Structures are given as structure tokens and as C-alpha cells.
Length: 90
Image 1 (cartoon, helix red, strand yellow):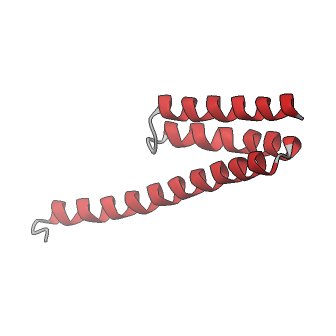
Image 2 (tube, rainbow, N blue to C red):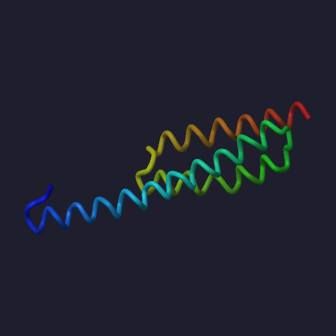
């Protein structure tokens, strides 16, 4: 356990940041899951809407350091491709 005053403060800060990061990661995953569900259901309109809502959340997570920016871009790109493929098959 932390002994010094500064170490105790650092522990408090880490706890706060961990909590915030966990919330952000959970929100990001929820939005991604909504897109996945819309794609699997075959509903093109819902998939487009879900993707439009998920993209800024994902990019904001990258900006805040939850995921790497290339990871976020890759996820958006692949989801976008899948939504477009859904439109082509419909």
C-alpha cells in the first residue's frame, strides 16, 4: 500500500481514471454491438443509423486513449464495408 502523501494521491487519481476509462470502453463496446446486431439482422437502415452513431463514439475513444487511433479507424472501416455489402445484397 502507498506510504507517502503523493503516492496516496496517485492511487486516488488512478482509481478515478480507471473508472472513467471503463465507462468509456463499455459505451464504445455497446455502440459497436448495436451495429453488429443491426448487420446480423439484415436491416440496412438500422445498420447505417447505428454506424453513424457509433463512429464518433469510437473516434472519441481513440482520442481519449481507450483504443489506438488506427484500431478505431480499422473498426470503422470494416463496419462500413459490411454495411455497404449489406446494401449490395439487399
